[in-house]
Amino acid sequence: MIPADVLHTVQEALAEDIGSGDLTAALIPADQELRARIISREAGILCGRPYADATFAALSPALQIHWQLAEGAWMLPDQEICRIAGPARALLSGERTALNFLQTLSGTATLVRTFVDLLRGHKTHLLDTRKTIPGLRHAQKYAVRIGGGHNHRLGLYDGILIKENHIAACGSIAAALQAARHLAPALTRIEIEVENLSQLEEALSAGADMILLDNFTLEDLRLAVQRVAGRLPLEASGNMDLHNITEAAATGVDFISVGSLTRHLRSLDLSLRHL
Image (cartoon, rainbow, N blue to C red; front, side, top):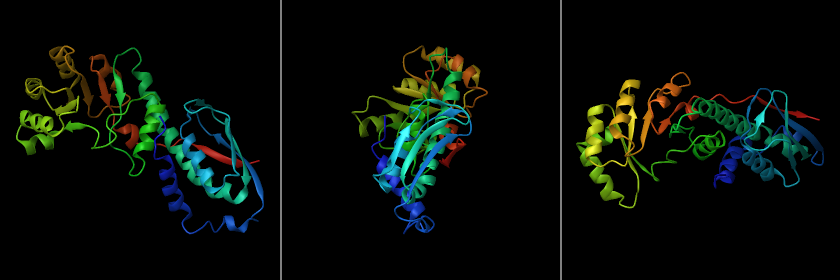
């Protein structure tokens, strides 16, 4: 589950923060050791351990981290998450970057878990979107998985989702689907977005593999599920939030995608304290 680009992402974050050198850490004697711990200030899902590990390892192999909680575990307020010991300069230089990863990804995973809990008892799976922080696409989608959600596409390169502007540029739903099959014959699932029940009929007639129902009312979602009758997967999207996702799932759609999982982000409150 861990993204292959963790080290690259961490190196970019460290370069952004430290640049040519940590001027404040240089005030501390080079041989000074320090012990610290990271604690949670609020409840939530722990996510981001691989990024914190890579942050401190990049600054000093002598830094030792002892985790008290597993990745994906539930944290309580004022709970100790880990202890860190080693060279003071390296520990302090990596503090903010490590916390940024942990707070951001834990916040994402916690929000995802809240949505997932609302879907319990329904067959519907929760999907993320490409509405991510630039440079943190893989990290945030990793956090979605830790929270219990599922990834849609990682990017524009690993799947085809034909949206309104693609349809307009191609001339019709049928023409867009035909072009997609010609371009990527090996793809087993080509998805197309529709905005009403009439377009749904067009997509079915044109042989879509999966259909995204964009901003459908609850009644139209029910009608779409009845019309398709399980022949292909249906995804509901558009203005889905904590207040309406359970009702949308009750219509019988297979997937619900929520942009706010990675867009309307609130970091979890974590703190590093010296021992």
